[in-house]
Length: 541
Image 1: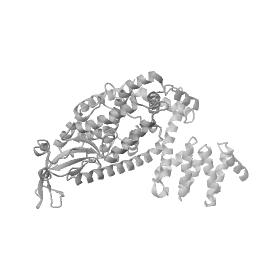
Image 2: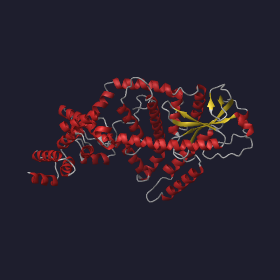
Image 3: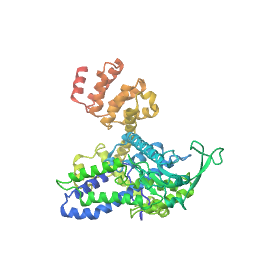
Image 4: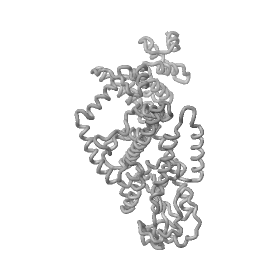
């Protein structure tokens, strides 16, 4: 995926196939940041630090916007460009981009990573939403979540009833977690000229349709918009009475990070006091409910901007009012207003299409990717250790590649297919208790049969997954395919699984005999087997 904003061809924000570039960048930056590069590194840190920070936030903006667009895209009815599997891969890779080793995660773990991310996000969002609702209503305000098309609410608005302003003029105000000034007695609200809405409420304060019998109309004035994706404390994004309120908080977060990271950054033998001080500072502010040391609100801003641009369920005037105030809050010099971003995006989309059609563009990149696949295929799917060390010592500048041949191309294609089927097997083994009942048997059998026919290069994790599927299944077809796959796989882990099946007294004799036969054949073919497997085969013969 690419970020559609910058001049010429937009740079990519994520490599769906995974990339080690992020690791080398992080390692090099830590060497410079911690002072290991000497005086030259200190000068680089002062210049490169702010630029790197802005670029990183720019990239986070693109990731947040892409995830929001994909969430909205999933609600579209009719024909889709991406399959469910492709959508999962794209969303998971985007979510893993900011993690140091996220690019190295194997695809069979994507489903688990996605599930874990959803659980954590929903838990954080639910806790923050309930906290904000409770404190909002306790202060006499009206809480309203901004729900997207998929029913999820990542933002919320705090309103005040105009009719309550005069009545609550002397009411005490507790702004904890709200981080706005008291609306009671505020002359600006008493003579409010900005956006407001008239809604109808019944005797139990439930919103109803206009002119409902027994209902009364009330005028709502927006006070603030909050992000709900941040843990523990709701983060303020828009203050309708004080545009500078969230901006000052964001600037404080940025300044604090720059001082800690670039001016007082860790050096050899130092930094412990700074680390402890930062932890205490964050703990105290968190306990007080003060939104001053939260993670950057950049992601919430980006999500909100995309929702305002694409989700038409919100009131048009309210969308324009929030969008106008959001633009005034940005402190990133790379940020543009929404209309400018849309114009740039259209232009960069045309550049991206031209790049895809150019002989020196996407076609050349695909050729390089294929050669990289062939390099791995030439060495059994893994890069030799000496070349890995060389790449590590040069921070990724050294890249070992082999010469492309039709034979290597065919082998790379086989490994690509094998990787797909290994992923299906491992995912099923992880989530399934009884494969023939709680999984897609047709898909599972297709993958098991592929491994049984062409899976000699399958890995040890796949062997363990197949062993688990065999143990959990009572279906003869699945068990037969499992044994055939373990026999075909040329590694000791597969033969150890066969040995475990042969020795397990709980298995029927026919399965133990079948496992023994496969072990004998593997030994005769001189497949990779452990010493204990060879000893057992000798005993059986």
